[in-house]
Image 1 (cartoon, rainbow, N blue to C red):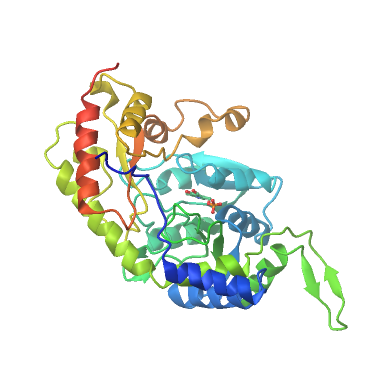
Image 2: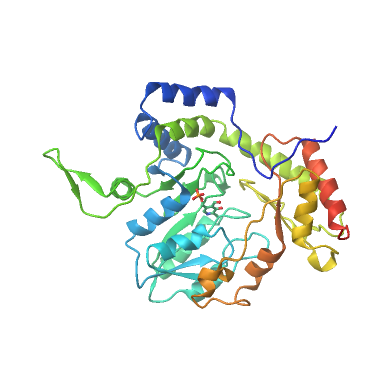
Length: 378
Ligand SMILES: Cc1ncc(COP(=O)(O)O)c(C=O)c1O
C-alpha cells in the first residue's frame, strides 16, 4: 500500500468547527457582526488585553497599519530581504520605499544592527518578521527608543509564539497575524492587527471599512479613503473555534519539530547548522525549514523537491530573497547586497509540519530526505 500524500502544511478542521460554521451560516448573519466582535475579544484576551481588530488577511492588516501611521510617499520602512513578499509589498503599496536589510542565518530574523545602519531621516518605521524564532521584544523596544520610529511586527507565522513568558502580540507596538490555512490557526483567509489603544482601534475600523465614520445625526462621513478588509462572521466563527485549540496545536508542532531533530541527528549532510535553532523556547513551529547542502549534492533543489513529491511528500519554499524579484530589481536592488537572505533564498526547503502529523510521518520524511539528498539525477 502506498502511503498517503503528506502536504507540507494542513489545517485541522474537525466536526465541531464545521458545525459551528454551519450554525453561523444558518443564522444568516454571515458578514461582519457578533462573531467578529467575539473573535476580536478572544484574540485580545489571548495576547494579554491590548485591542485587536480582525481583517481579511495579514497583508491587509499590515497595509492598514502603515496607513494608520500615516506612512506614504517620501517615507522609508526598513524590512528584511528574507520574508514572504507581502512584508515588502505592503510598504510599496502605500507609496513608501521598502529598505531592505539582511537577516541572521539561524533565526532568519532581521539583523537589527544592519537596520540601525540603514535608518535615516526618511525612516518612519521598522517592519521586522517573526521567522525561525520569536523576535526579541526588548531589542525591538530599544530600537524604537533609539531611532524614534514605529514598529509593525509581521507575526504572520507567529500566532501562538511566546517571547519569554508573554505571547507575541502582548508587547511592542503594532503586531499583525495571519490566519491563512498554512498558519498555526486559520479563518480560511484572514488576519488581525494588535494596536495600542481604543483610538488606534477605531482608526483601524475606519481604514478597513471604506473610511466610514458614523455621525451623531445617524448619517455617515468619510474622512479617509478607506479600503475593504473586514472579516466575515463565518470566518470569525471558525477562528474562535481554532483559537481554542491553538496552544494544544503549538505543543504538537513543537513535539514534531523535536522529533525531526532526533531523526536527523548525526546526518553528515543535514547538519544542525542547516536546521532551525533547536533551543527555541516559545517558537510557534509554523515551519520546519532546512538549508540544502547544494554544494555537496548531485541534484538541484528543484530535483530534490520533485523527488520528494514523487515519494508523496510536499515541500515548501520559504522564501525567495525579496530584493531579487523583478519589481525590486527594477528599483535598484541587486544580487550580493544581502548574502544571508540570498543564501536562504537559494538553499531553503520547508519540510511538512502540521499538528495532525504522526511521529511516523516525521520518520518517513526524514528517511526520504536523507535518501533523496544523496541521490543522483535521472
Ligand atoms: C511572513 C509573512 N508575512 C505576511 C504573510 C501574508 O499573510 P496573508 O496571506 O494572511 O496576507 C505571510 C503569508 O504567508 C507570511 O508568511
